[in-house]
Length: 335
Image (cartoon, rainbow, N blue to C red; front, side, top):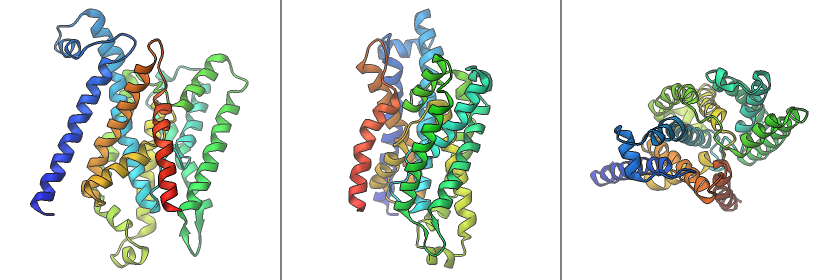
């Protein structure tokens, strides 16, 4: 990597981190009760009004942290899945992993009778178990003995599983009371329902552990991105490495959607933007993906909470409005 390329990469990464901070402050400022940047900064240093302290530290800050952590998790999960499948259209939401986690969360919600705060640390685990079962089923239906995983077959199978699992979620609460119906509808829309401190602490370990593991094994992802004969020639155990990274991707995606709801397309868009900026090498590509994911999610959340004054549009819907046309554009390029 030349000196110019190193400086350019560092510049892009620094700009990305700066934008994450700016978007976080924007998210802290917008909402039903508007707070200016000065009020936010003053409140952070203990000079704000009591009402501002409550709004900032009890309501908005945990939500912003959840969005940042979820943005990182979904973006890295999408990047890993795209490398594993050699498919630029792969995304945890599109191929059904999010919906698989959602079924587990729905069952836990009905079992807990709506008191999910008491089960906050169990949410990512339940989501992971149901998501990995879904991922293995999708993998088995997409795999052909002589041809391996076929990209478009995986997308079609994943979309089918996502639709079927969403139907199962609706069926599970069809005879439940109104609050249960409201919860599952909000989850499907991606309304960031778990925006309290217990859910921040529940999601944080998954991101702090799994994301560094993924980055440390970036070179293995570079090898998996090569053709199969070349990867085998370099001494890589393909099945072992694929299963390892599949578990990492599913764990990150399941942990994120267990507290945010069914948010898709972040894992699709963030890796593409990062790859276009810094290239396909995962040592540079993954860190850039990590900063772009939160930016997309924070901006979508700010837009959703700014359009309507007395309520907000779920962030998942805002992301889908942006991501769906992008997905169709990528699909057209591959056909």
